[in-house]
Length: 232
Image (cartoon, rainbow, N blue to C red):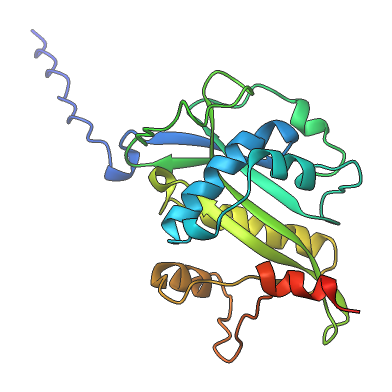
C-alpha cells in the first residue's frame, strides 16, 4: 500500500508591514480664488490676525475685499492674486476650475496617519462638492527688483487653519507661488515673518529661504500717510 501523502504545509499568518497600515487620504487642490470665496477669505484673515496678535489693526470687511481684490481690471499674477487651498476626503468631482485660462489647479493626495477633526468645517464648506472645505490661502502680488532687473512676487499673507497645520499644506501653498514665479521667469519670491514666530522662521529656512536680519520693514499708513494728501 502506498504511503499516505503528507498533509499540506501550514501557511504562516501574513503580517502587514507597518508601512501598509491603513492611511487617511486627504485630497487637496490649490486654485485661484473667485469672488464667491470672499467670505472665506475674510474669515481666514481674521483668524490670521488673531494668531499674529494683530486684530487691533484690522479694518477690512467682506465688502472692501470684494471691491479691491476682484475688479474688472484685475488679472491673476499681474495684480493681487490669491490661491485657495481646498481639502476633501474624496476626489474632486467638479471640473470647471480646470478650464481656468489663467491657472490650472494643482491637486495632490496627502496620506495622514490620523484623520483630521475640523471643528469649523461647516463655516468653510464650499459649493464645489458635498465635502470640500477651505483649509488655507496665500495672497501675493508682483514687485520688481532693480538689482536683478526682474519682476518677482511679494507674499503678503500665508495662512493655514489650525487643524490643518504641520501636515505640509503651508509648504504646498508657498511652493505653488514659487512655481508660478519660475514659470513667468521672475527673479524671486519674498515676504516678511514676525520675529517671535520661530516655527515659521525654521519652516522658511528649511524651504531654502534666507532671513535677512539686516533689513527692517518701514510702513507709512493711517494719519501719517493721509497727511501727505494735504501737501502741495
